[in-house]
Image 1: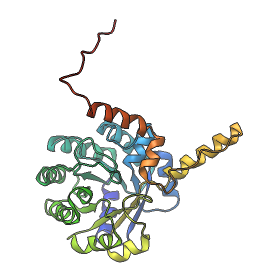
Image 2 (image 1 turned 180 degrees about the vertical axis):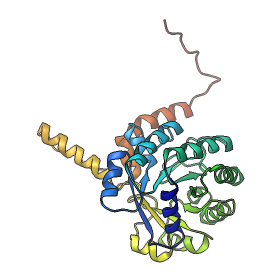
Image 3 (image 1 turned 120 degrees about the vertical axis):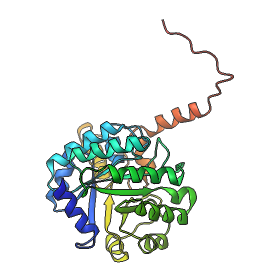
Image 4 (image 1 turned 90 degrees about the vertical axis):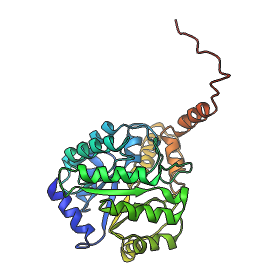
Length: 300
């Protein structure tokens, strides 16, 4: 792990071109990315959830995420950056999370400031925790790493909830708390994307999500503006789903399913992973009135 983390740190420090890390969701896709010569792979949380058959609604546990990261890290010889969601609890949970991902062999994780259960950063309806709550978790993550080369990425989803200025402030506070990289999720204009590396006092990561809340932007532009890492979580997952639809249609002789998620954003894709079913459940329990509800009947 130390070697992978060290090479990642060299890229972060500007000793190499901007690191481009396509998203992978299993060991096979990790091998494909490595075989194409990319210098890092990104274990996407959305893709991992989809591989388990769930939308990116915070339904997976820390152990499930670490298990996938372990399989991925075992088959590639380059840094693995992993999505660690919110750290799966309070500061104590974050300590365990950092140690578990480090033991899995990954080089870096990112921890966000959403309230749990979190949602994909490019969906509506996100909630964030108080700034100090998140900063305590970032400090715990930084102090609990057993290998000093292990990279902590601080992700803030504050842009959609509290505005651009608060997102930048949180990023800077996280760097002061010990984070190595700042990840401002889902800026909403090209101007915001361009400004983030200038306003944030440390290395920055950008999340490339076609059809998401951020406008499309070229990788060379991100590098020119000063970003040090670009992750592409859906680079393989979307095309794989389309290819599977086409392959199955060729067997049955039917028309392939219309790839409505292609370019339509994350919400449409999560519908293919059961998002509609989970949305109905959330609506049901959000409307539940415990005062007027009838008792649950006992089953025989």
